[in-house]
Image (cartoon, rainbow, N blue to C red):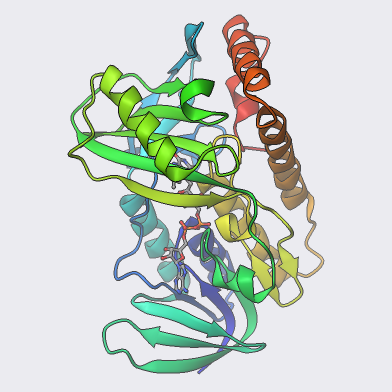
Length: 343
Ligand SMILES: Cc1cc2nc3c(=O)[nH]c(=O)nc-3n(C[C@H](O)[C@H](O)[C@H](O)COP(=O)(O)OP(=O)(O)OC[C@H]3O[C@@H](n4cnc5c(N)ncnc54)[C@H](O)[C@@H]3O)c2cc1C
């Protein structure tokens, strides 16, 4: 089989890329190893400036004009007129994006695991039948997440990543909360993100600052104090790659987590995945397409990475920075948008 644009991974990055390519009548196939599209370990938070305005209102499970931020010394609520963040169900988001990509003309194959990548071809295995097939391509787009095979094929290392642990518990609550506490989460944080019928409770920290076992212990301890006993709930954890080393490698491209474009500071990755997916598609359609949007995204990403590096240097510095950022948000000197990946 010969394909012009082969996309590995049907996450938000791969699907955004497929939709734009197909809209321009480009022959496009997406390979996804899972049987269904959309489900992903994620708290499902999307920002107003970044994404809420791009997805149908019905997709938002809850939208929040207020954000509660807690540190060891401060407990603040910031409020804006329009929602700052909304929560979405990743399965519904993925399925909406897949429908849009298919309607535009892209083909999406599930249960299709890419096992090996060569210069102009991949070997893909059908998860159910175990049969393998060689697919040749003109352009290869690695949208295959934080443990990207395409990234490894390019020989790129993956040194800067974070670990995210998430629990979905049944219940309703109306406050979206961020908890910064250096003793518990180093230069990461814990969150409470309410959805429609469930609540996402989790924690994120850069891998260089904390190991997954300690992060989980801290999360369970902290959650207990917030009134959530998570011991019997199912934890889901994944790495979030923020080791950006480029996105355009000639006929091979990386998008989203595969490119390391998630924020190392907050773990926000849906927006960078969608934006980079679209921009890769536009670059394939027109090689002279301006790289302005990607440059802005990378600049934002670099700022976040620098903050991670600084706050990761030592615990006292990180604790002071967390208090200062919270104070700046409280007094209005710093707008919450500055902490988002939206450009
Ligand atoms: C606990 C946690 C909480 C998070 N919370 C948020 C949040 O609130 N807001 C936010 O914006 N971001 C959040 N993120 C980050 C966000 O989930 C990711 O950044 C985002 O999903 C990246 O999108 P992507 O399209 O690049 O990759 P992914 O969504 O990871 O999609 C990659 C796809 O590629 C497929 N794939 C991989 N390898 C192969 C292969 N060999 N063959 C075929 N298919 C393959 C995978 O199955 C997957 O479907 C969170 C992450 C974690 C771990």
